[in-house]
Length: 605
Image 1 (cartoon, rainbow, N blue to C red):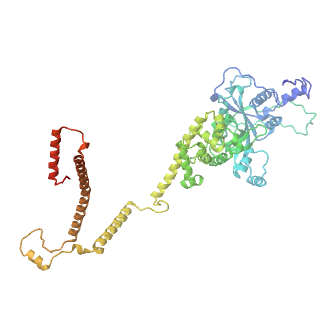
Image 2: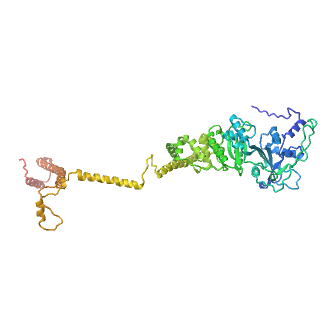
Image 3: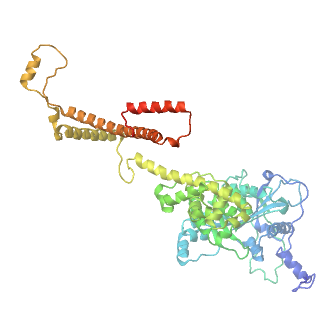
């Protein structure tokens, strides 16, 4: 396949070098370019913000035209989607204002200063409550007032549009001076200006009036374009112009990680994120707000909490294409103070059961695979990222893993590509986070049981007695047992065995001796029950001993009989013996005869 490159050098509508095309480009600032700045850069704290008078800016003066081209060049270099309609709105929209950040200006300077940063602001709000209610009922909104109408529709709040605010439409910094703090310096001075901190020490001067030409005086064909006269200064210090009373600053832009970082650094908090992408920018539009000093901040905290609660649910749908780090950045903001809360045991059991907590503990102890707890990740991620588990400390990477797995429902393989971590390290960090979370969940359940025990609620709804009461109950039970035992001994048993034997006469005769002894006994002729029992026991023991001795005596007798039989067999069959000495044979035979004679045995003849 061969690729061919084609280049269009001649204009289709105009011939090359046509004067009309050149005039149109100059009029609409279509070919504005940023000049290269030479020399060093001023410090951001040495720069000042100035208000630009639009009547002088669009007065067709040569210096004003040059300044306008420099401003538009910054907007074009900042990749804003500029159109002729934007230039027209900038020129005659009554609610729009322009500010520029300039370096230190010398009093002897005769040239225009270089523009470091330009800010376009649109005043919004102060809408009547009747118009708001009518628009919300019809589901429509009037043109303009982007932030008030959007917030009113998203939160169904008819009080916010009544506030007065300023929306920062565009902010552009010179390409050579970007990421050097000039944009933050411009925003900081703009906020101080609308907070009334820029106070002028000069006496109030009368505003310069610009002569107005009546429409009836000249016709369109007879009018001659020329620079206006008696124009006010192009640039005004902020202390020379009184600010409008405002309650907040707002901004709306296409969501990117760099822009979100810039606006968060300036103290803005997100309150709305569009679910579908913008047709022009291909990005999700986001609205961020910042309250000014002197106004209440409670409404901003309420909006941010609701925004965060919605976002954790929407990340599983069309917003799942956001990077986990970008989604995590939206869920954390230091500009709005959100206190961490701890779920109660009853609230926790609505989301998780005790068996789910056991599964988490099993996985945290490396006894199961991460698939065992996959179904629990959405609820866990929601609790952690909305700070419902107290001051639980997890690293940003661990929180990003929870966002990717629990809220955006991404696989481990896809998450390793986005976070640029190996799968083994990612799962190890995830296991550590689950271990911390399971410890907190177990603590919540144990604290609930402990609180019920301290309040006397007992376990299972049964109240537990105090220690003193428990000891008294134990003593009463033991006393009752002793009474039952005594009753069985002294009442139910036959006490005749303990009766004293002997008659009155026998005892009187025994006591008549007059001897003082510690022990006294008489003959009754009867055996006591204990003696008979003792005798029976001795008889049984003797019988067992005799039975044990009989087998031993029988064994000895059998062994002795066997020895005698051997001797008899040998005497009866002498031929079976080996030949021995005759003398020894007589002696052995004589000994045998004497032994048998002693035992009174008769031998056959």
